[in-house]
Length: 252
Image (cartoon, rainbow, N blue to C red):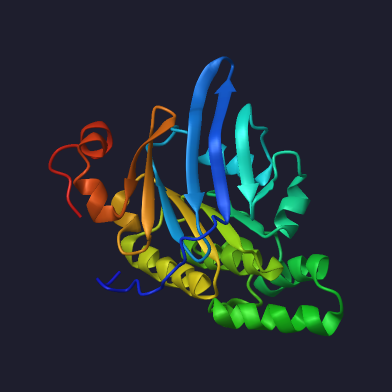
C-alpha cells in the first residue's frame, strides 16, 4: 500500500468495543491473562502476535462462540458476555473468520441468501445485493460458483456479506493469510473503504508489515497479555515488543 494511504480520522471519546481484563484457560493452560484493549468509533486497530497466542480465541469470545472465564467485554458500553451470538450481530458486531466461508452456490446467491435472512422485502434484498456486488467488484463473478473463486475473490465476497447487517465494528481474523502481496494490497483497499463508511475495524495478523499504513494503532500479544501498544512505527521503537516479538533488525 502506498505511503500516506491512511487519511481517516477517528474520535477517541467513548470506546465502541472494550475488552477489560479478560482471561481464558484451556485444560488448565492460560491462553489469555487479564487482557485489556479498546477500539474507538471509526478506528482501525491491529492485533499482532504469533500463531497460537490467543488472537482467534479473543475474537471467538467477542462474538460469543466461546465463553469468557473472567473479565468483561463491552460493546457500546453494554456488557455482552451473556448475549447470544445472533444478538451480538444485531448490536453491530461482525466477524470474518480466517478460513474460507462461502456457500456452494453462485456469488449472487451467496450475498442474496444473507440479505434474505436480514432484510425485509425482495426488492430491498435485491437492491442491497446488487449494491454490494458493485462495491466489492463482484458483478462480473455473479454467476460463478463461490467455491471456484480465488483467495482474494472469496475474501471480497465474505466482506460483502459481512456488510449486509450494517455492522458498527468488524473483527477480521488473519484476512491476508495465504494471499500474495498484490492481493493483500487489493483487500486492504476494500477494508479502507469499509472504514470510510464509519465502521471500526480490528485486524489480527502475525506480520506487522501487513498492517503498516492500514491501522491507527496496534496491540502486541505475547504470553497471553498485551506487551505493547502504538502505531506501527512506535512499536518498532518499543524495546519490549522488539525483544519479545519482532526481533532485532526487523524493519518495515
